[in-house]
Amino acid sequence: MNHDTIAILDFGSQYTQLIARRIRELGVFSVIYPHDTTLEMLMTDESLKGIILSGGPNSVNDDVLMAMDERIFECGLPVLGICYGMQKMVHHYGGTIDSGKRPEYGVSEITVDVTDPLFEGLSKIQKVWMSHGDDVSMLVGPLIILASSNHHVIASIRHEMRPLYGVQFHPEVRNTEHGTKMLSNFVFKICQAEKGWQMAAFADEEIKKIKDLVGDKHVLLGLSGGVDSSVAARLIHQAIGDQLTSVYVDHGLMREGETEEIMDAFHTHEGFNIIKVDAKALFLSRLKGITDPEMKRKVIGQTFIDVFKAEASKLRHFDFLAQGTLYTDVIESGIGVAKTIKSHHNVGGLPKDLGFRLVEPLKTLFKDEVRVLGKTLGLPDSIVNRQPFPGPGLAIRIIGEVTPQSLSMVRESDRILRDVIKAHGLEAVVWQSLSVLTPIRSVGVMGDNRTYGYVLALRAITSIDGMTADWARLPYEVLEEASSKITNRIKGITRVVYDITSKPPATIEWE
Ligand code: XMP
Image (cartoon, rainbow, N blue to C red; front, top):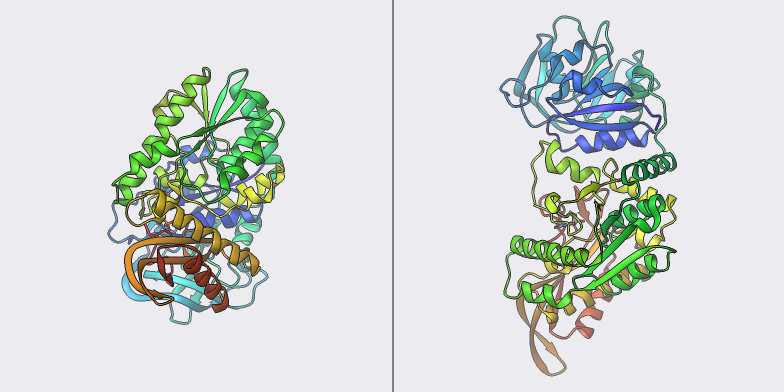
């Protein structure tokens, strides 16, 4: 594909992926590299037009770990350092960074030099998002100030002669009012990149790559029904037709009606080989007595592999295994230096030592880009817009042992909540909704009788990418309807509560 690229060096900021997404939203491809990637390595990409240095939690005054190839500053390509990245640049040119003297967190007002291309088209006063403990206290050499905050913090700098820029604030965060415009100025005016990143072109290019890679060999795919494996399946099917065989392992931990929906979406698609394995009983028996969340994830993952392998060996010889690995997964499993909070298990993600070569056509895409690709490929909305659903399924929404009874309670409650949200036209607002069955029992009254049943928690969140989330302000009547339907229809539940915690500090799932 013919497209220009912006490289992002990751110094461990929580926002690194956001920078990459913003650049792609501008129609320019972006790739995240580890902070210590060498100049030679970066230069192997002939489409490279500029480099962004991300922020990060460290201080340039005492870091040893965050090494970077400082020849990048002299290579001639434009560089934009964000927060820590700017401090790295200042440090390189001999300036001074103070630690903890003038920290700023939140929105600040800055005054910018509108004659510089970075701030072209903007007004002099800008509202920007600051999040720093360190700041630049002295500039020397060829660096000059482009903007200062109302707290007298140097907010932006540039090199007098070279296209080297720094911003102390975060233009990638929406709270920086005109951050997108600043990034766009950097990408188009300073790096002179051209738009060329489009999904239809991406699909054509990937289809060709898959054809070349696979030739006349056969590919096996674990279809989970989630957006990623579904889009991968459709894309690979377009490339190699019946050389692809998809296996759907029914682990019995799906939401109501989901298995049928998935089968419908693919079964009816001409020439699509799909095999459904009913492993519900096996999963339940292996989960018996297990209450620890990480253990549940492990058992489910291992059982999935066992079933999948056994099924594949019955079919034929496969040279390739296809996976719906996303860019986020690639970053999480190695490139990134930001801290991982929860070890996600994706049942679609099989270990690499199964003896297959891998086909991973989505591994440069973000989730929202995969949805666009799915639409481009003609997948139904029910699949493309499906709420994210964890690989271990409803098992991690049951605090305690997974039994047929607990599964049925949480499944029914999930359906009721989703139906109520849909009936009130709130589907598009809610990024994810879930029911969590707790092991807490509480006293209730029904008719004239005392009851003693379980507490069920409802959770609905709004989010952009699941990295952060806010609890959805569902109207009281929606909560009331869900609560009353759940306590009336699901035997054994006496009390319904609504989770009003954001992420952070909580995670989206309870386990
Ligand atoms: P957390 O709970 O970490 O979840 O805030 C963020 C998003 O990831 C989903 N999730 C998982 N997905 N395997 C998955 O494939 C997992 O083990 C897993 N745990 C959480 C969660 O539903 C949310 O969308």
